[in-house]
Amino acid sequence: DIELSICEFAGYFAADNKLVEEALRIFEYCVYESAGFLEEGVISPTVSTITCMNLADIYFSTGKKDKALKLYGIISGRETKNSLRSDIFYRIANIYVAQGDIKNALRLAEYSYSIYPQSVRASVLKDKLHLYEINAQ
Image (cartoon, helix red, strand yellow):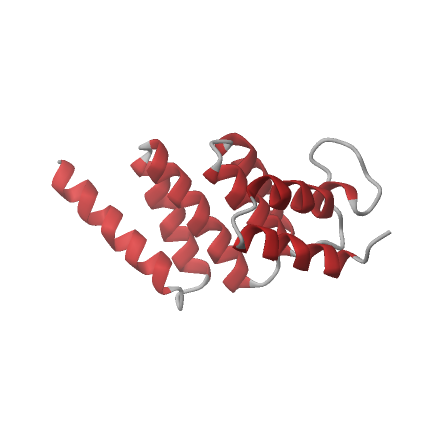
């Protein structure tokens, strides 16, 4: 019965202190269980996008790339703030880079930049991937 915002805060501090298992469990509770839904892939409507992104980052950093991509995909569809949507697509692009899928990484970096041109990270990644493609040919 802990308040969701307090739980999200606890997850942040667990992650910041590199308590991976604790952060993972707290964030999974916030994202998937806090609203009382227990169906696979159903996200609490009240959980913050940032908390979902933190969980997806933990999934990615612990080798669960498919779970990270799925969660990013779900939250990209519900987020209305372009700066956050851009950051989500930027992070997905980085997963594709890690997988060696430069074509899809470039496509997502370009999309990330197109929805929020102020994103320096998306701009740099997009330009870097363009150069990589040019040099690969």
